[in-house]
Image 1: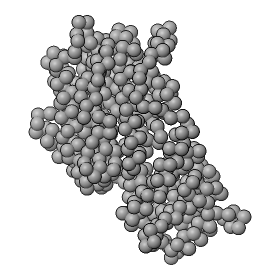
Image 2: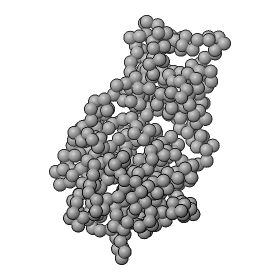
Image 3: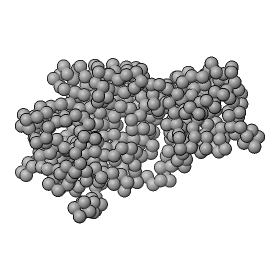
Image 4: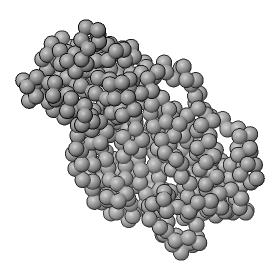
Length: 448
């Protein structure tokens, strides 16, 4: 009964969302327009930069390569049968062929180049297209270092190599750098949309961490998590991971980072004096957000959060600053991590940094800056060999440990915000949390 009343109350509550959420038909239009722009304007540059003049992407229905999933038009939810895409870049005449060795055109940009009645064998038709263009390098999606660039399955690789003329076998290379650049690079229009996504994410968190949803002494952390999940569904959006909400308070000892995940107790009743933390992200227009924010539940007669928590959030912001000022083009994730941690420690902080690329996937491809369990740096096969490139987005995810004498314990200030690294340096996509959300009242909390 209690849960039913909570959800009814939540559905009746109204918050002013500052961004319009498009209906499906308009979303499809935007997705296809962005894809056309990326194929025609971005892809040629990426192929030139990575020195791959032919890129072959092969995938079968329901076993899609992570790259091909980002290339399908809005009305294609999966590849069809075996779908083969061939991109050929002729730099001398500034042209790019975008062909599908498939029975159908793949959206507006990629034209079918296979007439099954004329050539029944799909692999033979692919080889004809390769021979007609005689590329210098043929990139395939296999990679040890980047999982998202390793989508070519063994069967398709074996079939491709069995049909490929011997003279082209020495031209086969890993397309990992091209695949990662395709996944990680954002266009100007995508960044306009990204600002809207993060704004919606902030709005949902602000409503979840409010008196509209939380009644201290009654509402549980699990109920807030499911409210957030339901809110995403009600708005016609999706989430790429289940939300988590956890509590730090005087009566509980600090546990490891996994407290926010598998080690967090369910159905913990939220009480006055609690420091609440959430981890939440949405998927919209093929982009993803990932955000962690903090709220304080006011005790009777309190009008503000305790100074030690306010100062703790400021320390978290300082760690963010140490990290983002070290995000420099061409630096590897391990280089950025080591310098940022050392500077934060020298300033008297106790930081941990585990920042990851964000974009077409939540844990996306690109420069990894630490992991929560790898504060000494990540291994090569986690992407350390990949430098920081401009026009990329990251989940600035980190924490700092603070000692609270009043609580007789340490706690972690855990934060995560979307940040954009461009030619002019770093900026937050839609601000960051600089003030605690207060329950029972919502307070403006986003700053620069």
